[in-house]
Amino acid sequence: MTVDRFPAPAEEALSLTCEGSSLIGVFHPTAKPHPTVGLIIVVGGPQYRVGAHRQNVRLARHVAEAGFPVLRFDLRGMGDSEGTAPGFEASRADITAALAGLRAWVPSLRQIVAWGLCDGASAVLLDLDHVPLAGAILVNPWAQEAEQAPLRDRLYYRGQLRSKAFWGKLLRGDLPWRSALRGLGGLLKRAPRGDETAQGGLACRLRAALARHKVPLLVILADQDVTAGLFAASVLGSRRWPGITVTSLPGADHTFSDPRHEQRLREITTQWLKALPPEP
Image (cartoon, rainbow, N blue to C red; front, side, top):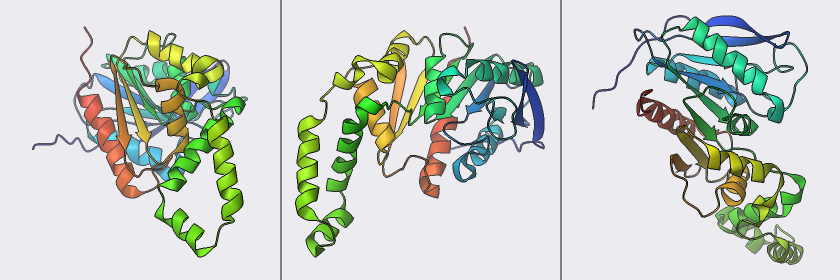
């Protein structure tokens, strides 16, 4: 199989303006002539543009080498950016500024996709109706609110029951097995079932955003991540979602800390970008 590679030119720091505040970003150009598809990376959680264990740096370089220019940037109040952090549910202006900045730097772009992890993915999904995106890649989206803690714990214990290490500790007497089993039993009785958790709050709004989507979406879920499990249970549910590709990464945790899983994440991302339908 032939794989196109475009050794990227030097990366450049840039400053964007967002409601009077300066956002700091890093632009990853591609050597591919006149690229038409670009990517912005929307950071999630208490992270800045580098990402957990420099994941966003490696992702951006990989995607740029595959022929897609990339912008990774700090949201307001995070990293080197000015202003007060608005929270992921109020970051539309930041995403809009990043889109405008990437278009200005690469005038040939016709389509821009957003890539987000955790609440960065949730921010992108909630703003799909309001920002000019050609698609989105949502990685382990955040869907948790206080009332969903029982389901979160239930998913955690489900993972523990599949763990050889857990059973080894239990059989050796390293765990207080009576209290552990009582707690597990109580959680299974109290936990919401099926789509019950999608009746209100954040999960409901994310689900509604999925139902309204008009652009291709890729959802990547790490199967050892409680956050991903909660999104699958409370947002995706058991229904089919036309126009949405859902991919599970076996063995991966929330930030894909295993280099093999991170490499697979990068590969899935670039494969999907290459298959993105052109603008009509």
